[in-house]
Image (cartoon, rainbow, N blue to C red; front, side, top):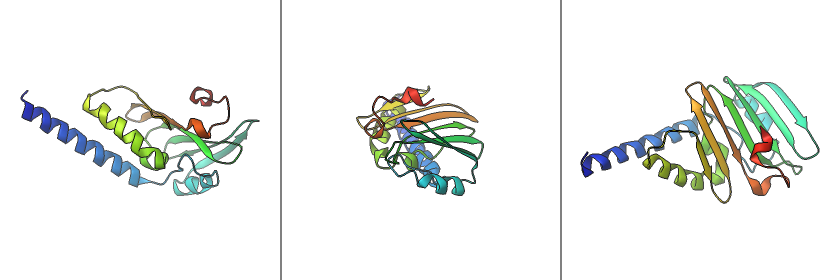
Length: 160
């Protein structure tokens, strides 16, 4: 493959990644990590969610619901701020909407990964947020976790 072919291929992949992200970011509204837990009810209404459930323990509150074939969980600390989200189901949620102000750091590392042509589950770690995404068509899983907002001693692995 010549240098021109490689550059063109990189260009096409980068454009596809940007369009794909923009499409899914605009496709529906979702809570953003770092926002208040009061946004969970409006998310459920916008996504036409069902089976709303709230589970509270001594450290955090879990809000879960079922929407568009997906199970979505949002985790709030004792101050009512969403510090993590997880999803499992047929579609991938709009990652830009979920990450909010944390999206730019994620996007930079994601773009580097696209350049390497790595096709496996993605774990992006920035100083501010950790994002896991993986799966296959109609079988997606993922989570986003902000350590600075999480209760003391809670890790991403504790929320499964």
